[in-house]
Length: 183
View 1 (cartoon, one colour):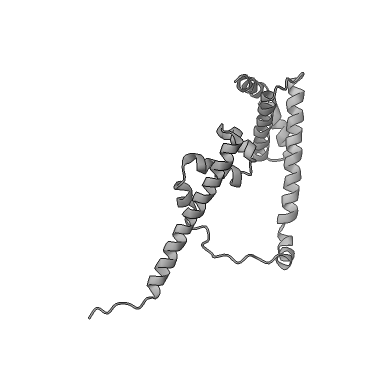
View 2 (cartoon, rainbow, N blue to C red):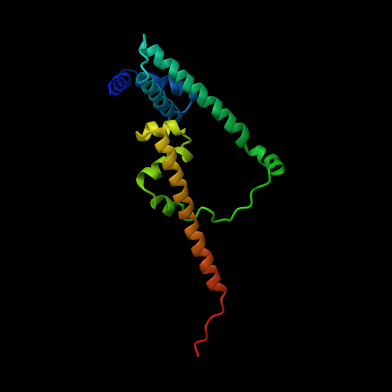
């Protein structure tokens, strides 16, 4: 894949300058590292589509600037919603869903019970928020194969999460049963 070599060369020549730029724009090294990573992912995708930059440094800095702006906007939106002063207002407007305290017990076991591809697909889709197309690209599959894979992964996850609940309900039922006499 020629875009892999091209991206590697771009990274070697420009990553340090882009990191400095992103850190200045975002104010955090961790955020800047994520932004640089996203910049090169976007550059890789563009090269794969056949984009040939005239001036590579300017092209990469434009991508990095867009990534930084996106990250700042999403951070601003998160802060607006997640600020501690809003919790009282949110509680008054949106009632808390009634959930069992141990609702996610068994999620590790349920994930471990899946095939590696199912686990990767569901984590990319649900936890990282990637689109089906992006998951397909990441896993090297067609989009329809990813849709099927994620459907099966969700079904496996649901079944895996039901097993611990069924076991808990069974234990609870036995705990309330009268003890047998030892006479």
